[in-house]
Length: 105
Image 1 (spheres, rainbow, N blue to C red):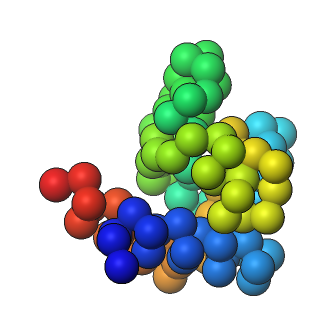
Image 2 (image 1 turned 60 degrees about the horizontal axis):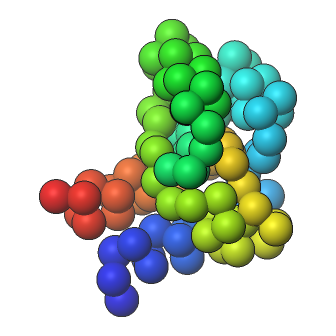
Image 3 (image 1 turned 30 degrees about the vertical axis):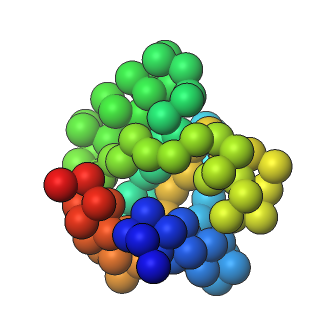
């Protein structure tokens, strides 16, 4: 299994476990409250959205990945599309980051 496929399957598992929050408002709240372990922003999100979440994640010291397209993120998380999401489970967040590092090297 390719590492990016493993990444998306793990993301789907997190969604089924209700370990993900979606949407700009909910993700901002998760970042501010310290519940977000990892934020994922779609590569095809607007530049403004990417900048906004990059700044928030840097300020609150939350890991951020810019990966996948809106439709792909949505497909694996049971939605039509997903522009930004926050992973709330620390173990899954760590595994997702490990997968991301493996295929981005």
